[in-house]
Image (tube, rainbow, N blue to C red):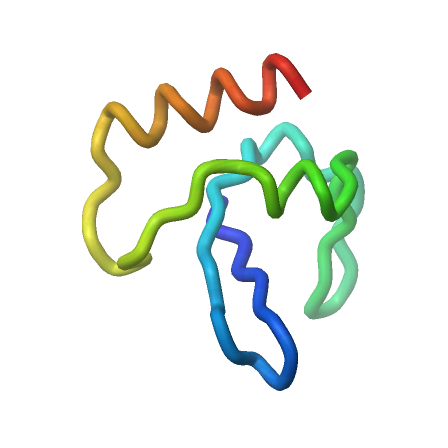
Length: 68
């Protein structure tokens, strides 16, 4: 799942992959993750969320969450 994080006033948006297994609840328009903000923001970021994801990024993301 793609999670976008941004800095002040939406500047510096970064996209991070988060495993769907991290979803603990869903409400109208929002989700709750079993991960803290630091874990998500320290995950590998990818520049273009509209492009296909390469295997290297997927592997690095899995490693990140396995060791967090």
